Length: 592
Image 1: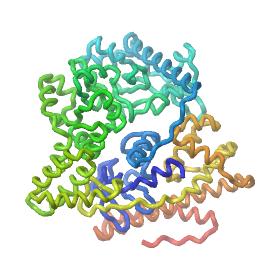
Image 2 (image 1 turned 45 degrees about the vertical axis):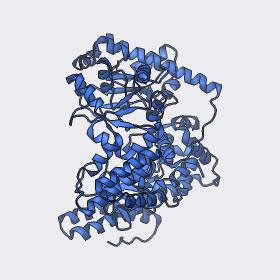
Image 3 (image 1 turned 120 degrees about the vertical axis):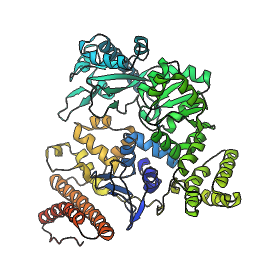
Image 4 (image 1 turned 60 degrees about the horizontal axis):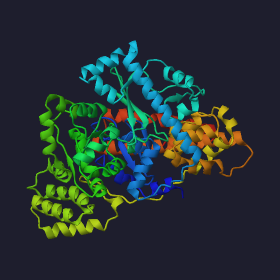
């Protein structure tokens, strides 16, 4: 089994999704409000047998990797590393070869040249006036702009590309560094255009990537460099190059979300502040900070701080073997606002930061009535799995006693429940269960042999790329197969495909390239594969729609909503009818 397969098999999608969504039993599966869009009625489903998810509101779905990629804004490699760490799977690493070291050195150099170019455009370009005005409105001094080497990317398709080519770098190097984007016709253009630029450096002061902010109201407001041999967002911290000495001296690291928060803090003299660059704080980021200090404070907005506290409190503290705190910011304020309004207020909030476990207690019981047996049970169900994960026995006993006092139940009773939870494998613990939440056990992975056969045929026979069979991305349920199909669509030849993929997928790619297939009837087999993939996709979609239809009918009865829902369910049926007609098979409408 590949390492990707091992990670999937040892990861329960229900346990992962339940950290973000309150799931309830729905027939033989689970449902909840979609975490990707606002809705009042649940259209988000988790399918136990397939270990997959689908949202009918977003019309998207996939496996556990695709869920993490979408929810945490991660690429495939970042999501795999996160889940592997949680599942206790060690991803293979190989010694760096001499040519790879030389290649990395070239990437460092091209990134440094890019940072200088962007900084020069901000300082001197007439079109950079909008970016200069924005920085002035944030009250950033010229010294601060220079210290952080802020920059501006011109509103042209190839301004950076042409500059770097002229000074000796190659198009391949620009692609590998994530500075340009390849189009379907093989051409490239600048990735960053008309944006305020933030060079991101590692602790050795090398530029490893870039963050960028739009200067208008377009979305997304911020974008980062893609995953590259140098840049991994989940393991990088903005301003770590400027903060290491101060963090050591103060024996404290303060973690905020954004670039602007960090820059404002540093300009105001708070030089121990780093940023997670708009994503959830990761264990790799905490691990890197552990080398500098065991004392960390999260200064995030209320929603983000709550999510961090509830989901990752113990794993963070187990890593650093210490205590993490949460700085509780005024509602609607971010660190930039607080510091600019009153630096003394920021200092006071830092002093009053709560231990993250105490903050978790407050979050868990905020809307509970602990005078009732039901809510006492809910409080224990929410908090005890987190306490069970603590490695520090003294702190574990402390919080067990606190929970016993909180719900006014004997420590012996709570301790007995704690011992029961400890016997449950960690991957099956759901930390924030709701009433009716179902805990499932991981099931064997369903075979994606058809997907793999189709991909193997395409990889082994490049001439098939000219055949338009209308093979769609959504026909692939497995994230690694989706990644390879997208790379195949965007690249010409195996070397280019390999370069586009995260290194963690190379093993799977090699297995497909070497996969044994008959050598005859290539076109016919390709047509059959596409037809069967489409058929499977539509059948699954039809079955899922039938299930949601049945649930709606049971809860609402007949009416306009059901009529609308039934109409939504017609489209897959018509498409399926066309598929079966093409195959010469008799079609019968699915039963409602």
